[in-house]
Amino acid sequence: MSNSVSIRDLSLSFGAVTVLKDLNLDIRDGEFLVLLGSSGCGKSTLLNCIAGLLEPTDGQIFIKERNVTWEEPKDRGIGMVFQSYALYPQMTVEKNLSFGLRVAKVPEDKIREKLARAAEILQIGPLLRRKPAELSGGQRQRVAIGRALVRDVDVFLFDEPLSNLDAKLRSELRVEIKRLHQSLRNTMIYVTHDQIEALTLADRIAIMKGGVIQQLDDPMVIYNRPKNLFVAGFIGSPSMNFLRGELVERPNGLVFNTNGVDFVLDGYEATGPLAAGQSVVLGVRPEHILIDDEVPDGAENHEALVDIEEPMGADNLLWLKHAGHVMSVRTSGTRRFLPGARVRLGFNMQVASLFDTETEERI
Image 1: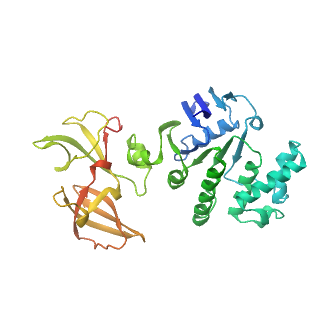
Image 2: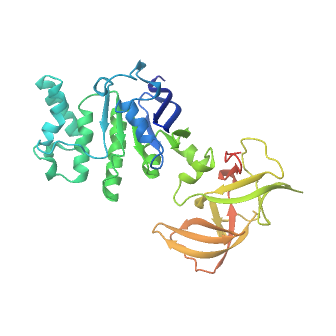
Image 3: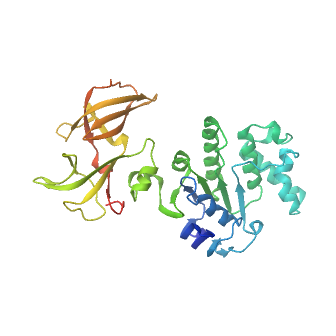
């Protein structure tokens, strides 16, 4: 499959501050790629470099195998949707959608055709005569997406388009964007700090920290096999449980030991050699810890103390004390546990993670 966007050795500095560092990235034709990270990680800066709104210090950007590093934004074949809707307040929705086309002197019949198509896809036909002030936040963002859509571009760029909306609208518009991508199959690059948006929308996620891509992979690979400690802690709500300890050789094989408590590593798939005496961090997600009757007969189990229970509707989140650690466990919302109760725990090591304490890389 050919690449829609290719980034080669891209760096960007503002004075002594380096925002992007020797970044390389290939985005496939028709792919939905999400740039995910906390504020200041460089994700929006990278998007603005692709759009031509920022000039890189070094490196090159290719769109459809054409070097666009020094081209104007209007010549790059992109459509951009911003966090702020950036609509002209004095114009109707129809005029907001068609303004760029009229400036480009697109024939009137073509403009009507493109407007009708965008209005149908985004379900904004009844809004065409209104002005932005008469629209809700979700409707304004639909119009902003429509303005990019009518341009018939190769690549759509989204810069945190849902962050100004309330939770219900965000959820609804997230579904609309996913449906839009499935319909158009255009390349879409989407910036967000919201991991739910990333996991639900992306074909692949690029998790960024300090201007560097930490991991680029399928959402489920990132969730289940994070490449390092940062990625493991960033993805997942609540966060992965981290237990610091070391690997110890026992008669029945290598085990993980923390504060004098052994955890058998049966089923764990290591990415490299494991050695006794190695200082490691064991990571286990809350939903990968079994509780009471969920623990299979004969399987290793541990006794823990319930500290706090958080009912969350379909799920309950338990905070437990065990082996000198406080751990979170996700369980069915139909089950209730009283603070101070003792429970049995089982750990699914097939989906657990081990990280080297020094390098913080998965092992």
